[in-house]
Length: 454
Image 1 (tube, helix red, strand yellow):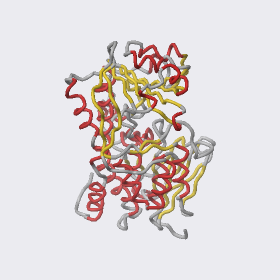
Image 2 (cartoon, helix red, strand yellow):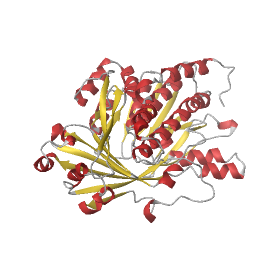
Image 3 (cartoon, one colour):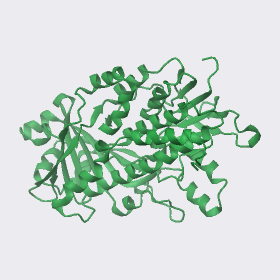
């Protein structure tokens, strides 16, 4: 590209970063560099789940893109109502069926490496990727005389790079977020400044996750017709619950359990200027993951019903995760810098919506930056529109996601006969609503120069 209108650096090559790069590729006058900390973009580990609202955004990349995704998903996209999760009240000797969660469309599940592979295959020549580049900090010229000068990026290996616009898609442990919030705080009075700075680092949410894979053969030997061998089942108990379902063509049962510390969960998104939140069980903030023996793993769930115990008896070992989140931020942009995805709104996993929110961020960011009226001089306005439209929505999704966990752990005073409707109504935004209204509003705000978005 001989003369792009500006060069965008995306720090982070995960779901949000790569989706941003693909979305920006529609605009031939923008050059994109993606900087990824890892040696490879093909991550291993947890899968990616995408609800219909976010999948409809991915469909905007065209039928070829959609077909590539569906081939890796293994089932067709639908917007018909389908059974999603069977929920049981299990904090008693003999559990009872509570309700079946019905969703309008499926949660589309992908192996993370497959999902990344499709995104990478759709990157154009105008996008350059860089591996083993972990951002440490950036410097943004803010004086009037140099306001449009390049932003300088500094990486852990000592190298530097420049860009006109920086998108921080670097996850919950973002390097962009604290740098940006420090810039934002500089112009504030002491009380406001302290509140902003309290949002820089991720905090333990009060949620602990327990994850493992169980041999379906082992469970079948104990209980040949156990329900989790064929359907997605959730065993709900006071302050602790788990869900289990078959994966890998029935070879394994995926297990995800959770405990919730009520006081910490209720205050997970509050700005905190006086009393610091405790770190996870007294450990340092870097100790988020640990390995557990079978006995340690099943301990939080020992009082659940017999049907659940049959599953727990098949556990051989597992992993404990301290679920961290990001507080509700005062802004997700400053100058020509914006953050997205987990860097902006890392949330609890109870609605499986983190990846979808990253996808929505990416598409709206590309819409405002790629618009014909956006120039280097007006990038701050475009990013302010992104913040105005996305931050309230993603903050609400984070709140709803945490509430889903609280409802499943019986931490709200909701009558049992109303619990199914309450959980469904709290979640149905994921299949009944669209990003399109926000996209139309973004364009309207961009094209009306009389509107002050700040």
